[in-house]
Image 1 (cartoon, helix red, strand yellow):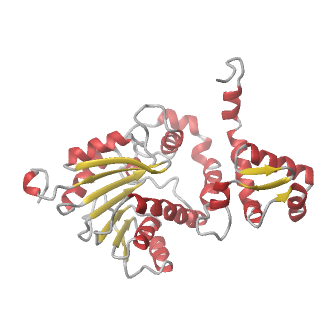
Image 2 (spheres, rainbow, N blue to C red):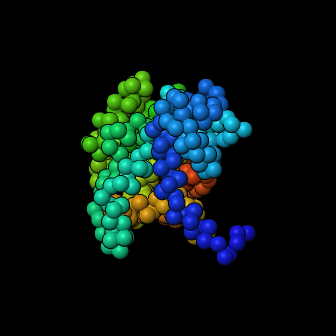
Image 3 (cartoon, rainbow, N blue to C red):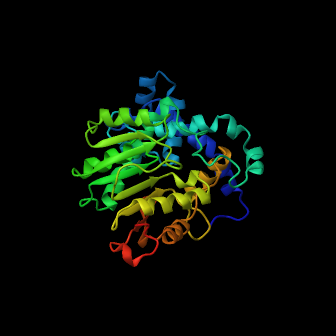
Length: 343
């Protein structure tokens, strides 16, 4: 237990910006890529960067202190997550995803954080998906890479081997559908998003060589009919941007859309039931408020209750890639036994 006389806990929170700046600088300087060839001394890194060895030593020491590098004597090396996600040209590179946070924190909404916090009202914004904090062009690659990493983990958590078609509502970059289709060769997907987002997803699908299996449609899925006739509906990081009424109506429409035996999968950074976080979903709620979303992220138990209300059964909840959780519901195989089947 920490010393109750010390303000250390508050100091660590107050210096969080400095910690993130260290991470952003590490990415910008491409030091993880440099260290991927093997451990290096601060002097060797400084020489490559044309910097003063003492400044680089202290910078790398700070990286060790916050857990993104490791040190063995005078040599520094990548910590395991850094080696996996911050080495350029690797298939799991997420550098662009992380530096997005630097851009977002410098944005106008965050500069008016307190005013926005006090002015926010549930459902007070548009019922459409909020795009104020959406990725800009330079973030697209990072958005795709993160979706691919998460989609690959989701593919390990779901058995889609018997499924032929997946409807990815609000599919963004198309990365999750790309990852799922790569894992399950019989699977086809329909990615649905708004007109300003869908063309980018179409390009990513084409570059992935999956244009024959993944169709991208420009549809406002909150208002328009759902396309195709898929056995699985995926909603990843979508419901937290919609009001409760809109979310519940969408789940009911998805239930009616699915055939008997079909599945609906919700994925995102969901709050825990204990009411104390976790930290990342709690911070996501704050970001939603800053950017004027009509509602905030909810507890997995809330989503499970909404699925049951819509008529889904055999509801499952689990963390499949921390902090990502899924909530899954199935439509009864015999719709005659369920008055809410819509069939």
